[in-house]
Each structure stands twice: as structure tokens, then as C-alpha cells.
Length: 285
Image 1: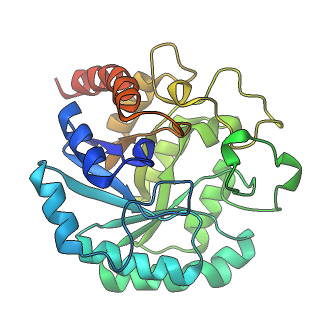
Image 2 (image 1 turned 135 degrees about the vertical axis):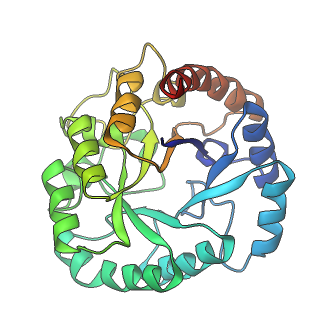
């Protein structure tokens, strides 16, 4: 059975301790930490004391289930692979950071090799090839897409074929699959069968998303959090994870929380958690 976990991402403007305390209060025991480029969450960094971070997590009965490192260059990611190992984290997550031929030819291989040496798996997120920018939540940039990345089922298949290594897998992001009009359950089955599904986001997209216009703007945060009224049927998708035999982390996630208070983050996340936890608990009975 997979593990229901949480992203620290919605708390990107809050302190690490406030975020961890609130997630523990909701009922989580595992959190994915972020060490990404602003305005994304960047609570921890190489050079921080791993012992103090682990002590803080333990204080609230939490442990780290991943380290996300979006918007970083190859050297910065290599630093964070070792940092993850120092934190006792077994999975580092980022997206395709270059045109595909360069990504699999020169960018990714040294990172996978470093991961293997450190005992850290590399999970590449399927991600639209819309360029990342500090204002990505405003959308746009669809006309600036680069040629090839890892944003379709076919490209996911190509990635795990081109680098067939037990330390290289995929972080599956359902909204990006939905935007590309792919069948998410098929991707779950394919990756789990091949032991290449390393991480899964429980994440939604606003029903009013405009294909070919909105880019990385998946709607306001409350519309990205899973709910019975959302775009995706997460009860079905979680049952597909279980049916496929996935045993990793499935983590509740959203962007779109800039300017939110700690209280609002907690309120919206708790409402979504009640829906997801009900579905999760139904699978464990």
C-alpha cells in the first residue's frame, strides 16, 4: 500500500517549523521538503545542518519522504543529492531541465550516477515544456515552449528506456498529464509494472483551465487542492495506485498560495485532506 504524505510547498512563505507543526497537526507523519528556486518553496538548503532539520521533524513526529529541487542547475542538483542523503531522504525530485537530447545526454547521467553512489533515487516529474519563470502562476508562455521534454506518456516511456537505471524513475503529476490529454491510470500501471514510479502527486487543476493559453497556471490554490468537485477523480486514481501495487509516497500538493496566511493554508488543506484521507482510509479497510 502506498503512503499518504504531504508537500511543504503550500507553506512556502512560512517558516519550516510553522509548516511542519501545522502538517503534523493535520495528521501527517511524512513531508516532502523543498529546496527549489524562489518563488517555489525553499525551506532547506545545502549548508544547513541536517541534524537540526531531522531534530525539528522528529519534534513533531515527522520524517522527510523526498526533496524537491526545481529551478536548479546541474551542480546545484548534485549538491542537493548529497544533501538528501545527509537528511536520510531516498528520493530527489525535479523536472526536465533542458531540451530532451541534452537532458538525457549530458544533464541527467551524472546526477543519476551521484544518486546511485549516495543511495538516492532520481524522480523526474512529467512537466509541461512551458518555461519556468518567477511569475509562472500567472500563466502564459505557451508560445515559448521548447521542443522536447518529458510531458507526455510517450516521452515518459522514452525516458525510462533511454536511461534504464534503477536509480532513475518518474514523479507522476496528474495535472500535467491531464493537460496533455493522457490517461493517468495507464501511466500509473506502466511505471509501477516497471518499478519506475518513484513519487506521486495528489494534485488537481481548475476546471476553467484553458488549453494552449494558461500554461503553468493551474488555477487558484483552492482549485488545485483535491476535492469532490474537482476536475480529477482522486478516489479512482488512488484506487488505481493501490491496484497497481504502488508502495511509495502519494503527496497532497498545490501551487497558488502566495499571499495566503498560515490560517488560510491550514483551512484549505484540512478541507482537502478530509476528502483524500477518506478515500485513502477506504482503500486500507
